[in-house]
Amino acid sequence: MLTLHTATRLPRRHLLALALLPGLITPRAARAEPLPELVARAKPSVLLVGSFGVLDNPRFGFRGTGFVVGDGNQAITCAHVLPPADAVADAAAGSAGRLAVQVYGPGGQWVLRAARVQAIDAAHDLALLRFEGAPLSPLALAAGAPLAEGSDVALIGFPIGGALGFSHVTHRGILAARTAIAMPANTAQALNARSLAQLRQGAFEVLQLDITAYPGNSGGPVFDAASGAVVGVVSMVLVKGTKEAAMSAPSGISYAMPISHGLALLGAGK
Image 1: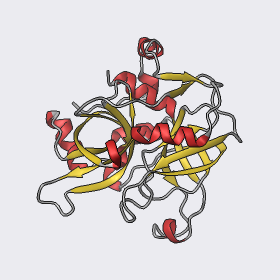
Image 2 (image 1 turned 180 degrees about the vertical axis):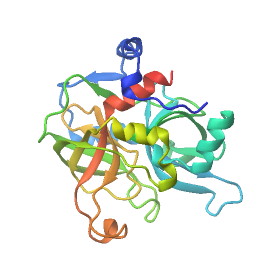
Image 3 (image 1 turned 30 degrees about the horizontal axis):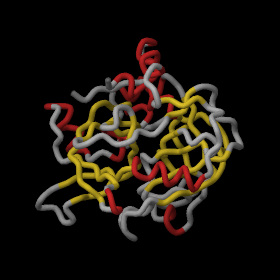
């Protein structure tokens, strides 16, 4: 069943349980890891997220990036990456619908896996997926004190989708600011009682990155370049003018949801 979970509603026992899982959460200030080693280690855990249909052309419709967490069969991505029809199907019947991921298999071949939505935090634009098949290596999620402004960060994803083939692409920059934001509804029809209540709760903090992200990066992990732990999830970019400007004249300013919301979603989805 598809449910809404927010960090403020997560019982303390869930956070305690997460802290007791070895290898899941990495405290900040861990040993430094050279970026090339971090990229090589993380690539098999960064996934393609999209829809699959036998009669579709192409059969796999790429929608965004995700990354492996938890027990190795779970992945975090952005809620806006999900195909709308799958969200409805999962909410109504818990079925996998047309949602699918592709994992980076041996020899660099992409392998299709069926997936379903396990939980959603629409207020923070995050979704937790469960996918079929053998478990993969989960990425370490940062815990402890927030990452300081000015720290080096890196993100991995699939900018511009499959236009140039599905290859992991890494961008590096800095955490420019921790800034407040309020997430508006996508459409007027989405301005229901729940979304209005969320707006009344006020703004929450997001990570402003001095990194250029593109369509396709949404849902991808943002790493603390020093420790290698995931500190955020790519969610939005600042666009100058039209959406097409994100491609032709990128602003170089991107936004990510702090991984604390992903940890809350992971705990609630257990």
